[in-house]
Image (tube, rainbow, N blue to C red):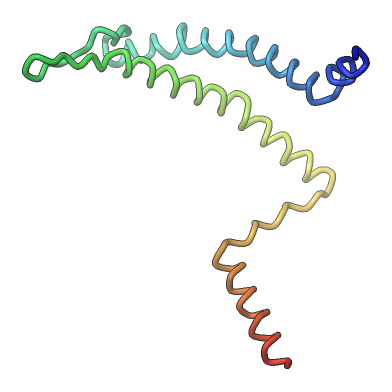
Length: 131
């Protein structure tokens, strides 16, 4: 019973996932600090307000509080930008340089649906003509 549990825990993907979660949480603190301490003050310097949560408007007797949504959208876009520009883009650049150094050719683009359908059509036509 415990040997199966031990095998499950020691499988590579479980350990990799655990490491990814821990690293993600640690990196999350860095990205949140970047957004809170650098990006939001820049937005405040440009637009003059950092806390948008109280923004709202009224139509008849209904109040639409859009400020919290706006703050969350700005935070999300800031985090997504930080992750892309600080992690994804440098890693892609590093991988491209490594492939070029090792002489690994770039992968050809996958064929589109239209190209695949045209290929199937041509194969079927050739098969019909050969009979």
